[in-house]
Image (cartoon, rainbow, N blue to C red; front, side, top):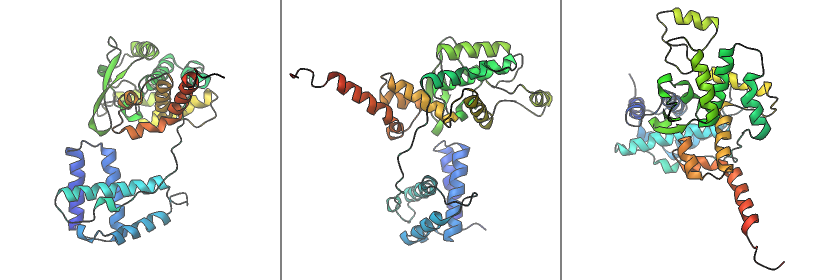
Length: 314
């Protein structure tokens, strides 16, 4: 029989799904982190969550080994603590006596390093699908994927969830259902629209997914009446990006999220405001967007050098 706190965790996870509109991945992660807390602390009620219990949990996390034999990163430890803080906040809103969330401080981490492409590296990467010998439909699909990612700054999960009917070619824009259950508008560049049209014109299937597999296994799956789609998965897109990074001769590590960073960096370096980029990326808080200070700081320096102290005598 579940303990009182196990029942409350279940209620909390249902709250995240129904009231907060969190994704299944987010809910699964919170479930994992909170179960770890219960496993280590061995408590059965919210009243047993004290500063000392949390202290012992933090020590346990700092000494816990990952599958490679190392310790958990500070960021990963913080994910565990954030899950616990959000759960405590939920309990207090339900008038349940427990530790206040503010008692749990997060670990200070080093400034996040942003990996992005620009200039010749970016052009070579985006053109990489056209430089190797492969079926035209795969060539056009992959080119359209890369251009769409750079044109919109979509998360890989958002890209994989797109349907053909979602894209409005005439308006060069469409709505995307993003993180936190919120819609936002994204825009198609001329390049993204051109390659999407070329790819979709070659499609003869009835699959609703915007991007699908085009291999023998996919054809077999399509014939199986129990299967509904052969749409690409996030893992497929990640492998695709890794492949074209290598073909383009880019030496730095590039992921699907790096293209999102490239999108934001390109906008900011061209003069777009931080708030506008926040909206286009679908960030809930401006602090998340502020990881791009490497761009804005340089932009401010250029403005300073161009306009400051020009009237004084040399």
